[in-house]
Length: 420
Length: 143
Ligand SMILES: Cc1ncc(COP(=O)(O)O)c(C=O)c1O
Ligand code: FES
Image (cartoon, rainbow over all chains, first blue to last red; front, side, top):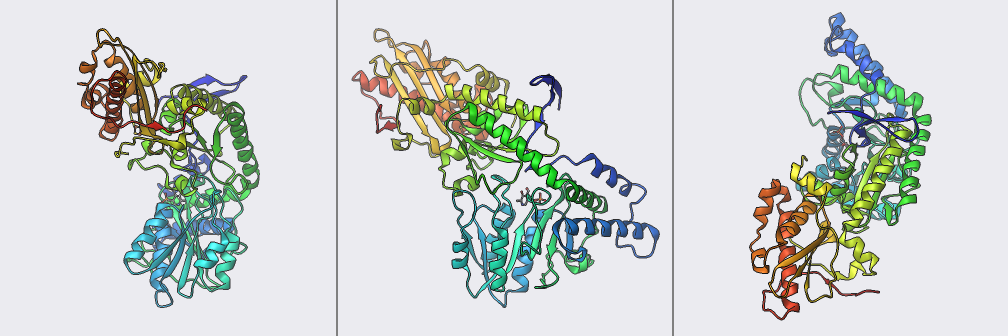
């Protein structure tokens, strides 16, 4: 990738391309990399080797990481199981609980805008005879607690609702959800991937029984994650989904990714130290971007709750402009779109569709994910590029023209091609 | 996705953007696609009644870069052609010219549909017989 430096506002220079897609993944913090490096070379031992120094060193590093991760979420280190990432953690949590508690009941509750790692896991369980309720979300992307209460029955064994959504950043009322579950003796799992290190999250206060974590969304390396499994009140049991050498107290076999785990631990330690301050900075940058865009453009809509939202997330629909064409116009900025044209399936984002805003707004959406390494100069540059490009594309948009002529686009009988 | 140079060129410098007077009898308007599908094209032609030659063409497109490029190219291609010649333009020609990948073929189909719809509209206005073309119908007219 070529990079070049251009002048932004004043004397702030921004380096292109700009990465602003921090919900997809984050840059590994250099302090994390530094701590990982020795575990590839001098300290390369297998943490399961019990009879030599190499093994002990590796094991010690793994245990330190476990403690750091546990500390960030208010757990104890024995409650953290290492995995290859949150996809695996979600699979292990949901399938592991379903298999363990199937005598007790066969009903699982989730919601419409979970990550595919949760939704597709639930769909598979349906094939094996489990009953799954997919709760709708309200316009703001949060579930209605009354819907959850109504959905629970005596066969319900598990509720799995994410802490924060990866597209619209909406924060679910997990504390209330967890409390409802605990009242009724139902286990509560949450995919906490996007929330960890970004907003306060505490497994005790938030009444969480299982939580999926991954390192690469909080400035750690890819391919390493964890599952928090509560050890008391209640003690959660799981049936392992990967059999083998019995690592991780039999819950997840496989030689541990020691450098990755060390990096994960360091990333969590950095988050424990700096999260409060960082959240303020990210929210300020996000609001700066939002205010600049909304100040210059009409008919832009924020998707998802403004109040209950990840600090670095901004998901906006630019009416009358198709998302992929917008991405093409800002091609020195890495962001993503819920538009069908950008997806392999040619389907617009199911998350935005679930908000009920209409498919046309899903096609027009852009997700900005502001992270630790973004600067104010970058935000200003991004705002300027987005505003210019949207204006240009609106001049090209027949919908914008029709809307300006006073035609109600919802009342037009479109001659749609069935190809899309 | 990597775009071909020609798609990028049409996207950055779209040809013939704009609108013609849709009430003129010399103008045919095609409006195809749907906002819920993420693509809407409006293509207009202005036909010389004496020669049946398309003297001007304009477009506006809501859609991906390939859809914008396909419609921009379509306006270039129809200009100077007679109405009947313009009807021979196929989406496959557009695919070839712009090196569109398989997922973008429907964007070229839409451009072909837009040409046909515009010509169909012009023929209807001028009392000529033609196959009905799928075409968006603004139910609610100007406010
Ligand atoms: C909410 C959510 N859950 C799960 C995942 C999957 O995590 P991983 O990439 O670690 O498998 C992601 C990231 O893509 C995510 O955003
Ligand atoms: S308009 Fe959707 S892929 Fe081209």
